[in-house]
Amino acid sequence: MKLAVVAAFAAALPAFAQIKINDSLSVTGWSVGSYQYTSTKGTAGNANTSADSFNVDAALLGATITPTKEVTGTVSFYYRPATEGGINGTSEVTLLDAYVGYDCGNGLVVTAGKFLSYLGYESYYFISDNMITLANQQFLAPIPGYHEGVKADYTVDKTLVFGGAVVDSLNSNNAAATEGDGHLKHNFGLEAYGQYTGVENLTLWLGAGYDSKGGPSNPYGLVQSKDIYVLDIWASYQINKQLSVAAEEIYKDGGKAPNLASALAGLPTEKGSNWLVYANYSFTDKLSTWAAFSGEDVSSATFGAGKAAVSVSGPKYWKASLSPAYALTANLTVKAQVSYTKYSSWTAKDAIFTGVQVGFKF
Image 1 (cartoon, rainbow, N blue to C red):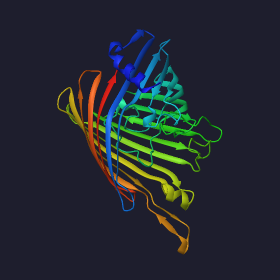
Image 2: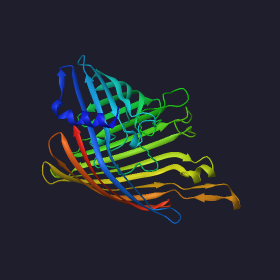
Image 3: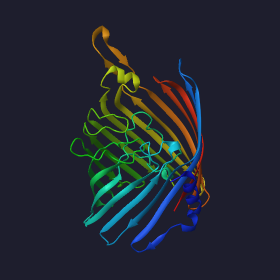
Image 4: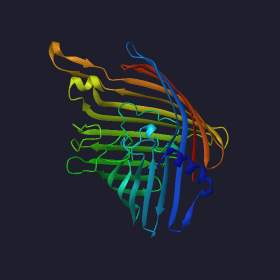
C-alpha cells in the first residue's frame, strides 16, 4: 500500500464514520499523520544533528465479528510507512489483531490468537497516545507489543480484574513490535496483571512479564541470550472533572551484555527502570493538554577482572513534555508537542522535539 493510497483512504473515512454493518459485524479504524522536528546536541566527538519528517505515521482498519453472544472475533490491518521504519524493514502493511474470544460466563473470558501485551500505561496505538511521542521506551523498551498465544481474563467484581497469558515471546521480533517470534519450543513468554478500581476515581494496576532465553534470531541476526523479567506498576487518579494525574514505574532485567565489544556497540545491560508522571487538564470539552515528566536509567556493568576490568556506564535521561490537543470534531483531533530531553552517559547531551499531529478515528 503506497502512502498516497493511505492518505486518500483517510480522507474518505468521514463518510463511513461509526460503521455498523449489522448486529454481528462492525468496522473501525484510524489514521494519524504529523510533522515532527528533532534537534540533538552531541557530546564531545559526536556531531550535532537534526531531522524532520512529514508523514502518515500509521493507520489501522479493523473489524469485530460477534456471531454469538459468547464469541467475539477481531481482525485488523496495520500500516506503517517505510519512511518511518515500516514493518520488519521489508513491508508497510501487516495483519495486526487476529484473535477470537470466548465468554465462559461468571466473569471469565478466554482469548486465543494474536493480541497486544497487557503491559504499559501508554498506548501502543498512535491515535490513543497522550502525546505525539512516548514518554519513555528509548533504550530498554521494556513494554512489549503484539505476540501470539492464549490469555484468560477474570472479572471478580466491578472493582477487581485479573488476567494472564502464555505467548510465543514477551518481546516482539521486529522493530515495529507487531508480532512475536512464532515459537514456543525454544523460548516462550508469560504475562499476568491485576487491576483494582475500588476507590472512587482511582485505578491501580500491577503487571509482570517473563521471556525465556533462546529462540530464533530476529531480523537483526540477534538471539535472546538471557531470560528477561519485567515488572510494571501504574496508577491514575481523576482529581476532578478537569484534572487527572497518572504515574508509572517499570523495571526490566535482561542481564548484561555478553561481552565488552557488544556493550561498547550498544548498552552495557538490558537492566534498569523507566518512570513517568502525567497530568491532564481539560480547559473545555474540546481543548485539553497533557504535561509529562519522565526518565530512564540503564544499569552499568563491569567487564573483565582485576587491572583489566572495564566499567561501562548505562545511559540515562529525563524528559519534560507539554502536549495540547484540540478536538475539531468527535472524530478529528489536532495535537501538538514540545519536549526537552537531557541525557547523561550517552552520545547526546540533549534534544529538543517539536511536532504537530492530526488524527482521525471512527
